[in-house]
Length: 140
Image 1 (cartoon, rainbow, N blue to C red):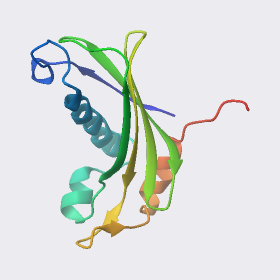
Image 2 (cartoon, rainbow, N blue to C red):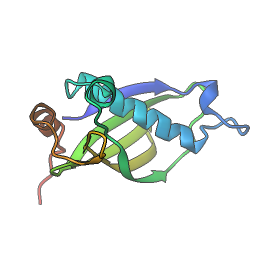
Image 3 (tube, helix red, strand yellow):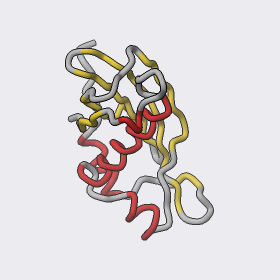
Image 4 (spheres, one colour):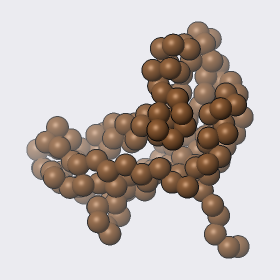
């Protein structure tokens, strides 16, 4: 199952050329991740970061920008889990506008525990829900 969220390109996302300034995509991706945690995984960044004192930093990101996006475009962000490790999760983001592919991005997020900020196992409740979003592989 995939998690989907539509984000409309706002003026704040655009540069002087009138297209999305590429770092803004990472802000949008992070917004999608935070919403996925709350709506898809049953916990929130407030719970993890503030109440528990843990964190979920991004350890790696790789993005291919296919076509520019402009003010007013409605971008569909699709998030899928491609791999679940002990403390890490590999994510695939596909961003489209209508039928047009705008970008793909792969990232790795890591669960880190407490003030030492060392990688730790995903809590059982989160790990169970992560499996719901694991991308199904097609036929070999």
